[in-house]
Length: 431
Ligand code: GLY
Ligand code: MN
Ligand code: MN
Image (cartoon, rainbow, N blue to C red; front, top):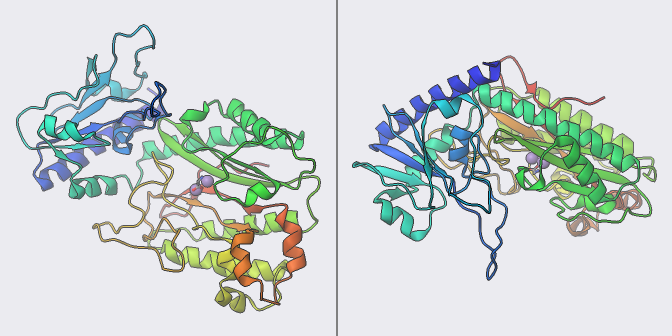
């Protein structure tokens, strides 16, 4: 048994205990977790790529296993109803050689029908079609139960941290290969293919579509295309690339200057990287993530001034709202079996914690706790649509800003475990 296998065993014991407590407190005899089903394209016989429901993945790590169900009852081993039809078109699902498989009953199911439930009060969670809950005689997605189970995903077990670390290690191999493809003059598609080859994961299994932005595309926050031709000149590459390991997600961004970069661009990348490292150093239990996000804006204001993009005091830059035009997204989010993991905007007792009105994109508004894994992803972009509202500001060095527009922007993103002893950066720091 490997160390990770031992950790998985402990993870499942703790999960069993947690579910027993939550189900007992809410008066349920059990809960049935539905992995889900891929959407079929309208009028077609082809399906979209698929990701299983987070609570199903929390137990099994199987992020691609569709049409399957997991029944959890206190005092009983979990039962996995594994969709494994007799089918000569497809290879039936196989389970991995991991300890969780031995700790549950497995029933192989030939149809996509839900299993029948024993007598009692049951909930069924997942992306159900209208008839499923009725057919099961169970309560569909009761909000109180979903919230309580979401909360149990917020702080990670040693096993989950180990998986997140491994996902990061494998994602970073992709990033290094992608950087080489960029330096060799590759197109966005070449860079993506180099990433996938080195990270050794097919595109449909990634936690999110990789963002591979050359030049101005780096300033489109969720840029979604892969140009097949290299651009005539290369100013920059922003690569936001992930990977799953046993269901757990890496979410890493790097930005590199190209041979045609303006001289001020590489120092700006260094500035954002140093800023990110300072913010990471501030991660500790009891710290407000909203406060860290506010600190990111203070630091961005100072960076805009020190790099000659704005000629004013950092306080005045902050007050003008300019930093929000240069960085309209949040500092980061919780990370787990979903890239934007659940329960980032509620307190531990379920009270909503909406983001501040001027920072609507912030996905994490909680106080930090040991065991949380968060992303730290400050950015600085030239987004003409947002800068337009600030055109009248004479303190902005518009010439310099416009020279950077062809570079799109900068984001540096690591995945960090919060501990009482200090931040533990799960993302290997490349040379
Ligand atoms: N890759 C999506 C994000 O950074 O949140
Ligand atoms: Mn990302
Ligand atoms: Mn992220």
